[in-house]
Image 1: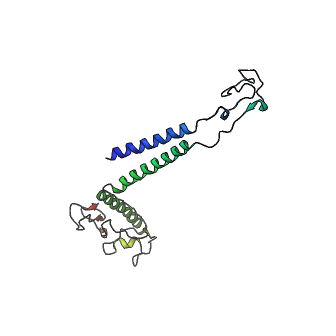
Image 2: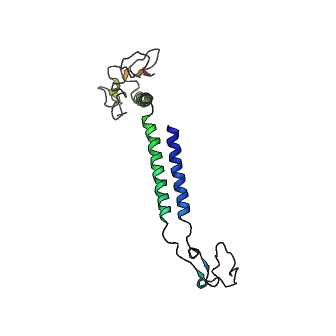
Image 3: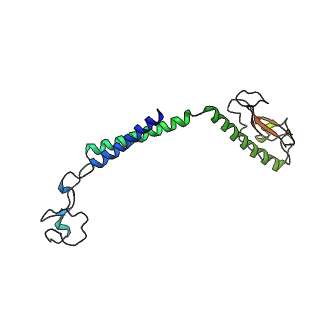
Amino acid sequence: MYYLVMTAFFALILAGAVMVNEGSRPRRKGDWPHCRQCEYLLIGIQSERCPECGTPLIPGNILRGERGRPSGLAMAGVVAMLLGVVLLLAVISGEAIRGDPLRARISAASTDAMNLKVALDAFQGDCGRYPTTAEGLNALATAPPGVRTWRGPYVDKVPIDPWGNPYVYRCPGSNGKDYHLFCCGPDGIPGTSDDIGN
C-alpha cells in the first residue's frame, strides 16, 4: 500500500511537470522574436542579418511579441506539482513519526545516558571524583554541600527516562566500574533484561 501511494504521488508530480511544460509553450508566432520584413523566427540566430530576407537585425527590425501569462494548463501543472510534493512529504513524515515507538524510546534513553555520562565526566574532572550514590544525578544540576571545586551546572535539569522513571545511578559501580548508570526500560524494574545503560 505504501509503495502504491508513493507511486501515485510521483505520478502526480510528473503530470504537473508535463502540464507546466505544455502550458508554457508559445501560443502564437508573435511570441518569439521575428523579422519585421519577412516574419522569420529569429531563434538562435547569431548573424547580423535575417537569414531569410537579409534585413539588418537592429532593434527596430526585430519584433518581440509578448508571451502573455501562462495558460491555465501551466497553472494547473504548478498546483499539481505543489500538491504532489506536499502530500509526499506528509506521507514520509507520517511514516517517520509512526515508526517503531519502542525503538524511538530506546534511542532517546541511550542519548540521555550518553549526555549524562559526559556531564558525569565533567563533574569528575572538576571535583576529582564522581558524585556519590547519595548525591545522585542531582549533583550535576546543583552543587552538593561541601564541594568547593564544583563548576556546574553540568546539566540544566536531570532528565527522566522516556517511560517517566528516574535514571538509576550508583557510585561505585559494579564490576570495578567508576559508576553504574542505567534506565530501567519499559518495565520500570531495575536489574531486568530491558535495562538500558552501562
